[in-house]
Image (cartoon, rainbow, N blue to C red; front, side, top):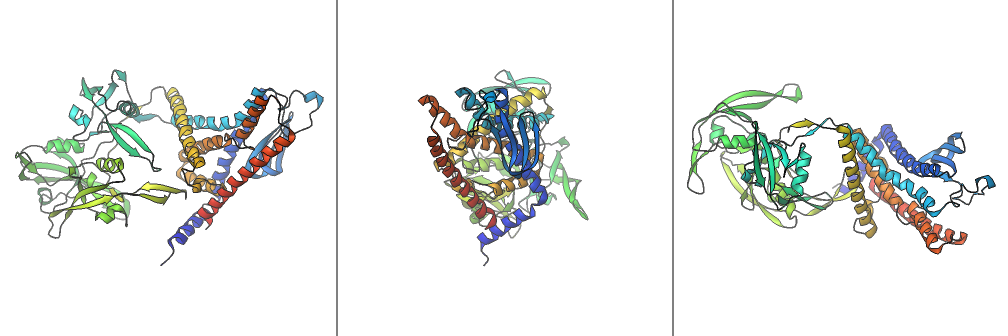
Length: 569
């Protein structure tokens, strides 16, 4: 049997080799921008304070290009793995009488702090520019229009309907779906008033958001408000699990999209369910069925059809007559199951129709996801239906027990994930969009907010590594940066710019750590000198630098070790 670990290592080595010259360009652009921005922060602060800058260098080693402009020398080094700014007086330079007041050491404490802090500050500010560029490129956003309503949810109980346009929440105007979502998140447990535009008239609905748990890949829990609405409509795409059902007898198949019932147009699953509610009677159903074009497998045509469906009569739990058309939402059909996953161990197979969890009927895959995420440590009873040997549907039960599993993300980094192991047949449409009003102002506000969130998230991650709550394998070096630059660049410039923003924040925070040889260490030294009201002696500075050198070397060795294990072994 082949060694799975060795096979994984071989795949990672192959991916690294095959990334090619384009990946080298992405890597150098990423590194170059980060270094130039960081050093430019120091450079700009020194220039603004009239502190003499001797050299601005991108890269180390022998200069490939060197230009002097005024009193500063600009160069590109042979090794493009960093850069530096050399400021008069920071390395014990001999200062001429003419420049006596322009050295860093001769300046007041606040100016020295400003110059040192400006580098990390520039890295922390770069995401604002990046996010602004991304948001300013958006012409429209998802509108605050309800695509579909989940049956039994708070919105459904309040009378919210698909197609409703929410124009205000508690009297405050909303235009975009993200604004509506933010107001719902902030109102968990208390009623809110939705002002709705419906068919040319204005109506009010009072809804109380309930709390739902959302778990990120790293295990962090986010508690969100939920009212049971979706921006993207659930398409009226059906599944037929029982070959003897009314739908199957009429010729309907799994995957058909219902277009109309008795001449009434149907756009969403909610509308379809509403049309089929009531006493059993014959229905004329117009549908669209996908058909492949011979020789062009990626192209699918939709062929129209008509079906006369005569339902089977049945009675509900209260003894009331109803109709069974044999139609289920395609949303709940299993499309694929990962071998060895909790879903596979429970007995799920592709083609099964998931119908209930812990005895509670569900119509939307979202309900299944939310239940599993709410308490990953427990076991859940899952109920599903499957076409039996005679064509009739049989009902099966199994136990789903999710566990945290060690996985490797797309960049080759170790991660933890909750794995269910089954995916559904997606049956979502496109929600309505609306033009952005005041694009520049919108982009500025979103960029600042997003940058702030990025700083907070990255600070938490860095603190977890320092405190030992995150694995040491999370630390990466140049090979990891090369890999993430390659993968992100291949996805397009949007993904690459997002990566640039994340790593820029990471670099800024890392440089603020109180480690000698880093900017944060210099800030601490300046603070000590301010408390002592005298500079450290040369011997004291050397001791501090040696400690810092030891820490930096240890971190570097750890990063290189992780790179070797992750990509070369």
